[in-house]
Image (cartoon, rainbow, N blue to C red; front, side):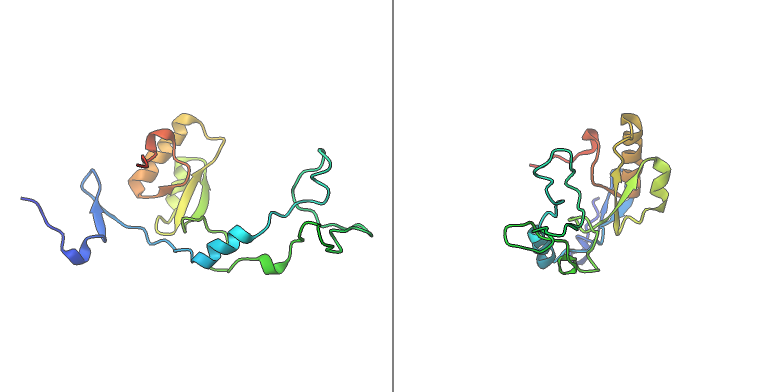
Length: 156
């Protein structure tokens, strides 16, 4: 005998391989205008970083007396301004709508809320611990933003 799910509850809950019910995650859906804002926001670069190899591109405010960039002359890169800032509700969210949390050990997963947070496994974590973190996250229904190869879903 197979149990049929009523049409009203079809997308609400599914069962995992162990038979325990897994509820769908209620993520924040990023509005199209927010995605568009992020796409149109320029990459802010340090003055003259393209000219000198020793200068990193990380943003520094131009302070020179005759600086074209500080004076916002045409042809100079844009300055960081408050008008480029995103909406408070969507600031810092991953494009999937989850809040990113950096995890470096399985014990860190205890403080994760699967309905609004997703994990990113730290780069310095080794292969075996990475797999262990992924297994625990899968049990708890937590989304992994950079899963190990064994846990990646095939996109067809």
